[in-house]
Image 1: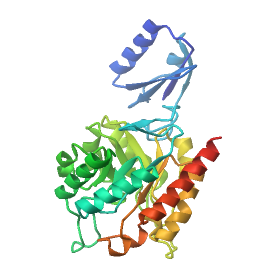
Image 2: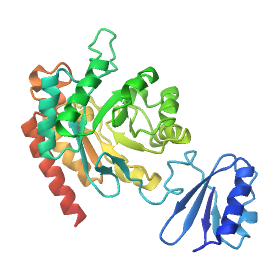
Image 3: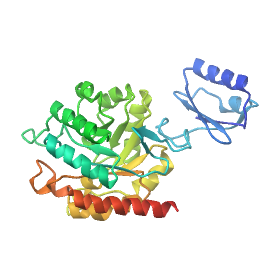
Image 4: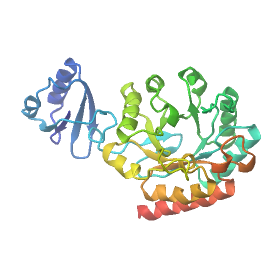
Length: 334
C-alpha cells in the first residue's frame, strides 16, 4: 500500500499516523520528494482500511500495490537510487564502468590490468576469487589469496574492488571488498541473499539465467527486506533456444526495469556474448538502452587466460569500448 501525503503535512499528524501503522506491525518507508511525501507500507496491509487513512487531513491519496516486491518497487521510491562506492556514484544518470579479469591469477596480472582499465575510465576493478563452475573438476579460483591480490591492486591504483561471493561462509573475507557480486547461479540462493541483507556493503545482483523480471526483483527484495538497500541489478544474459551466442542479452530489461524499480541497472555484455568481438559491438547498445553502467571482462593476455579468455577484451580493445561508451552517454545526456 502507498500513502501519498499532501504538501507540507503536519509533523505531529504524520508521526501519529506512522506510530499507528507500526502498532499494526506495518513497516513504513518514508520517501520525501520535491512536492510530495510518500509512505510505502510493507507487511500484511489486508486489514488496513484505505478509506480510514484517506480521511486524514494530511493524506492526498491511498493506493494498493499488487506487485509482491515492495522495497524495490519504484512506486514506493519514485526517485532513482544512487549508490556510492568510493568516489563513484552508481545510478541517477551517471555511467559507471567496471572492468577487470574473470579471475585473479597473479599480482602482476591484476595490478597491470587495474592500471590499464583505470586509465581508460573504469571506476571499479572487478576480479574473481571464488568461481562457481559447472564441473567440480574445473578451476575454482584462488579464493582468499585472490581477495588479497585485489586489495593489493586497490592499494596500487585507488580503484574500489568488486568480487563474487559464492557462500555466506566467505563473508568475513569480503570485509574489505567494496562491492559484493552475487552471480547468476546464486540469484535465488535465498539464504545467501538474507545474509548479505544483514550487512551494509553494496551488492550487485546478477540476473539468473532463466529468471523473469519479477523473480529477479524478488531476489533483490530478499536483500532489502533484511535491511540492506544498497542493491544494484546487473543483466548478464538469459538462456534461449539460440545457441550461436552464449546467452541472449536482454537489453529490453533496462527500460522495462526503469518502470518497475528505482534500483541502478548495469549490463555485463561479456557474460552474455562469450566472444570478445561481440562484447565490443553490444556494449554501446547497453548504454543506448539506458544502462547505468557496464561490467566488462578485461585480460592482459586473453589467449592464455586461466578461464573465459574468449570473452575477455584486451586492454587496447577496452580503451576503444570505454571511449565509445562515454561518448555515447554524453551525447544522449545532451
